[in-house]
Every structure is written in structure tokens, then in C-alpha cells.
Length: 99
Image (tube, rainbow, N blue to C red):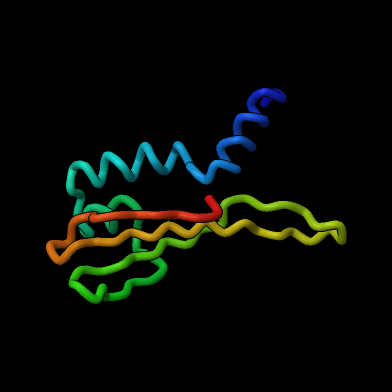
């Protein structure tokens, strides 16, 4: 990857948006994908919880790269994706951090 590619990735990372996740999650939300679809395509979530007004919140936690510390240890970066489903089991909203 060239200097321009690295600069673009740094810029995207600083903006907080992940184009790879956005191109996956936004169309899934627009299509009204269900919990069954996400479990089939993404696998079992790391955690599930009930929402107060109905539906569920699913969290996927993944290692998304990392960096070496000064002492030579590897410090992993954790990507956390939160999916909120309505009472019909359809994706209502999502957010992510560290991805």
C-alpha cells in the first residue's frame, strides 16, 4: 500500500466511519434483514440482551488488528458492532466502534 492509501485509511479511521461495515450494514437495514439472517451470515453474536421496548440488542466483538508496544507485546484492537433489532426481529439500527 502506498503513502496515499495509508493516508486515506488513517483519515477514514479518524472520521469514525468504516466503509466496509457501512456497505454491509446499511443495505441489510434497508432490506429489513432479520436476526436469523445475521446469525446465518455473521455467526453467533458475542452477546444478546433484551431491549426495554421489545426486540434485542446483539453485540459482535472481534479483534481488528493491533500494534506492537514498545516492550514488544502485541496490543489488539477490538471492534465492537452493536445491532438493535425491533420486536419483529428486523434490524432497526446499528453502531460500531474500534473497527
